Length: 434
Image 1 (cartoon, rainbow, N blue to C red):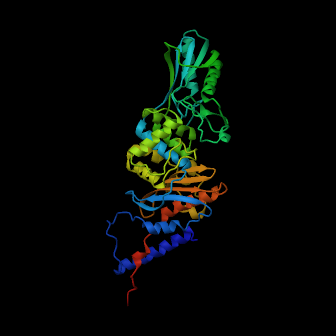
Image 2 (cartoon, rainbow, N blue to C red; image 1 turned 90 degrees about the vertical axis):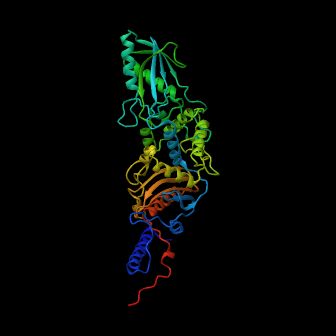
Image 3 (tube, rainbow, N blue to C red; image 1 turned 180 degrees about the horizontal axis):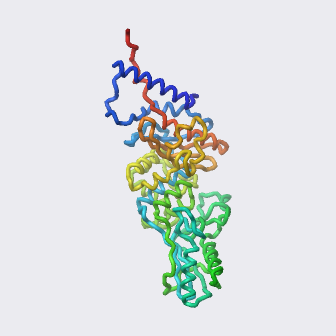
């Protein structure tokens, strides 16, 4: 099995031979303009990808050129894991707009106060330094306390209204064994539905209790906490507004946040007139893909974050979606949110051996990891200037995640270096006679 180093040396020899042949007039240069990038030859690229070790892996992939032509593919519907988040982000940006925000509110009718959910996936307890997390309970508490004290109120009843989403808060496709560390999806959640490393069983209730405890520290006693709609006749007291959706998408993709992906999938569903549920979100993304001509036979969407192994994506469909991302400036937050090899996000420590060095800094891609699935999907500009979009999936027995990760990173690195000219290009070329 050839290594990437051997492939690179072979390509170097071919390039040298090509240069000599062109200078002697025994080989005709391609008819493309001088500044046009040289697109790899499909069959040659496929042959080179076949040299990357995939021992005991079941792989599927697609590589497309700038025009959307499939250069190489094993186009089998596969589990995308968290690469699914690219599709969710694209649909959300298109349907909701990059400037869309989500607001958590406090309403009051004197001593009757309601904390109202807005579906902010990144609401925090205290002020955060993250650009994606400007809204926090401390700010809401400060404004609420000021209003109550101005009215001479020191004791309240608290309701929390969190009915924006519907259906189950925990997907039936998720393993029950994950429940201690995988948050349920509700429209009122603080700190992503987590307390430390533990997932809250009732995120909305936990948020209301934390809000009440913060009020108590500021001198406002909470005599009861109840899940219910706002008191009639309530007036707005305070608001905490999320970052724009574009910034939420960037953070969600960089760090592969499952909760945020599911939340924005629900918002997308609601905007399309569908229920804000797992099923509604799945239908919303499916409909968006179909409307964009990106659907393929054998595909199925089950949730927005990629935790469900029931989701199946055809590699070329994902690669075509990535092409749309690059072609339309509307989706800049999606492209900018993709982790960069050896730079940031979930790729910051990847591409870590010499067979993968060529991919460093030039591979921009979303990762995906489940117990028996690994994925990588994104884009790369080759050393010769061709822009390629790709989707690589690898499934295994659960013991070969490292092997799968190496296959993904080495395949992407090969794209970065592969001129991949067809050997037939050199057929019939004879050495010049003296």
